[in-house]
Image 1 (cartoon, rainbow, N blue to C red):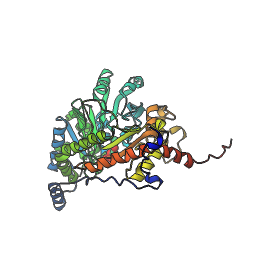
Image 2 (cartoon, rainbow, N blue to C red):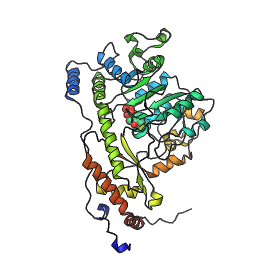
Image 3 (cartoon, rainbow, N blue to C red):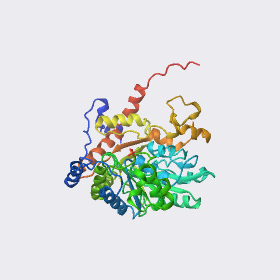
Length: 442
Ligand SMILES: Cc1ncc(COP(=O)(O)O)c(C=O)c1O
């Protein structure tokens, strides 16, 4: 067919054409009338803080609900996801120069919990397609100082728990899960948070399980629960009863303030009641989008093996910019002009962040730098090829499709396919827009 017979792709909004239209979402998060009524009652009754399950039964109720969701594990509700992860590390007694193998491709709080224990993050590369820690990279990073692996279930995708557990067991390491973005995600029948020696979850208002600000730690080990409680809860929650005798001499108020507010304990209970229905809607919409996008060549959703059930907190695409001949950022600008807002969630490998570089650090003093210096760890210029590829090629967008919203899925696909059909004009646009580089002065 001669090129004159190929119908012209509709003109891109970025170049003055008509946009497809904005992607809109159902209201999220929502709270049931029961949740609103119960939280209002907490305020009316002046139940504003919670020292433990005995003092505020709503905390015990929330922890029971969460425990049922996580295979009967011990649960410590906390003030945030960071508090939960920090309690997990403290509960496992990981600190003071211990090495924790982890991912450089995540939200910083996955890593700050390690730093706040004066432990040492050891970064290994991620899988290119998903951005999840690559189990195949871990073994080479193990040293006599390694105590744990911390995996993050990023964007709602479950990390490979079977391989991670096997690796941890083989080398007698602890496995910690950060499930903050992946409530309810599953892999091979295992739900995130039910495989590690401890897991931390964020329940801040932007997460799959949304309260105002809260989180929780889960662990199969009762002592980890108590030791976790000792660093952030009123008197280590010992007033609830049941604290192991050998820990009692060490309960005191030398703590971070990681208590969960009763208001949020009620929201935790009530939000769990509708979590699975919302996750089912997210998955149904994601599957529909995949079907619409079979013809997409350059912007791709990850392929998941059978048995992987992501929670779709965010949708994470990868863009083959080399084959497409334009940068990810030009693509993002074209998508945005059509109505789909997507950005690269991780701006750079965490190992590149200046607050980890004790060698040339000039900023406000931070406590973990002395531990990094003592360990002589040098994070500057780690290769991490897949992480760096994703920093340049991944695109994430919100996906709060928690109620029927099929027309928006069709629109999302229309936008993506329209932009892909216009790559030749985008190449030209990029060529013209490219700034003329000034001559480099030696
Ligand atoms: C992967 C991940 N880990 C940890 C956290 C920290 O949670 P929070 O903000 O509730 O402390 C977040 C979210 O903010 C997160 O996305």
